[in-house]
Image (cartoon, rainbow, N blue to C red; front, side):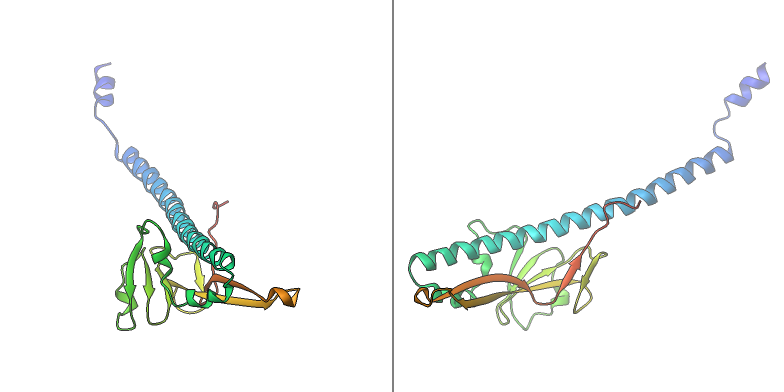
Length: 179
């Protein structure tokens, strides 16, 4: 009886330790992949949210031009920094850059406006699931695009529309689960 009590008080055996470590390593591996997907999904949502906010500001300006009877002023928007239109400055907007700035040196996870090329640049933090037509996926570039067409009734003039468009086509599809 005394020998049985001594055996129970010795603590972990080597086999129990190895099994415990193996379980911990497997859980860590599964969770790290899952959490990485969640983080990249959150980054994608933040990018889409910012693009939506910029498009809303463009729509507000276009509405103002139509109310004033001057929709042709839409082309002036193409030369402006869209981040200047956001009432409270975006937290992830790091400022204007020009062609002299090496884009590989820009901080990841922030938006920039290239004032020479009139391009919006987002430097990605996580791009495992991002596929960009040009480049390595380390950045997304967008431009303001002017679309205009003649109205159905020629007396109404032309219809103007400005939109935020990707400079290069991209897809950012993240698997929901590993099933």
